[in-house]
Image (tube, rainbow, N blue to C red):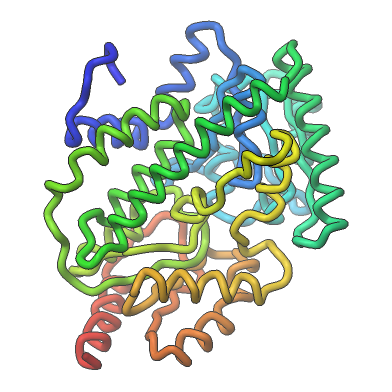
Length: 390
């Protein structure tokens, strides 16, 4: 927020868009003022602990329109990061687009991200001129069993200790409590955006929602909360949206491409099952617990993603959110080589069919959608099918 001036709802959203488009803006400003920046992959990394250490957390994202040639030259077969969006992020790391990072936390999530830890460690040793950040691997077990929770808590404690080394100060319970209050407020505000998006009729589009949610991962949460409050203050003046209500599930969406295509067909994406969307703010941190234990519990028991076991929990979560958003149809979008998401589609499709909810499945999709017309045709066919059934 420039100069501390009070923003209107419209100008607040413009500022949100600016940070979504210029994702390194706040982090570079922080770095320029002498602060340290921690990059991280995936929403499995507790940004709360990074913030409590006095460091700036920024979630890494790729660029569908960017290069991947340098990454592909450095990826050898046994370290292959096969998904295109992971190649994009790796390319940005190797070419200096993420040169403001001091540290990088790589969690044990999808295989292509997991492998990056080994690859980056090898590249750091073999070519110091690359100026890659210091890295930390956050291991985890992908179940919600009690024993898995104990293991994951200990790994999170290791992360806390490493962040204390990086920052040069102890992370206190008081600092964690302050940060939890701020991040919980952010999630509550994002839930209000989600409610406006799923309202009847919706007054926030899926494209707008992705920018609002995504920008929270590139800014300090206090600043994002201020923008969200200003934005929400004016939502009573937002125009209602017409059109078919669709739900999107599938691979991580760190760009607007797919939602822009869907909503150009006259539909509104009223909700989604995506770690760059509503799933990010689903679960608050329990403030009745010890702050560190509460963070560990939240990240162990947060809304399930495709890497979590059992799969039945994923199917229940998706179906519940489709029904609660009163979606009339579902779009499944899975990137090339995203095996984790592929396993879920048959079960999700069957569960939706039993509810009488039609769907369309885009499989083996490229990270950059250079030919949108086939997708548009399929979405328009889905919309027509929904309208004919009414």
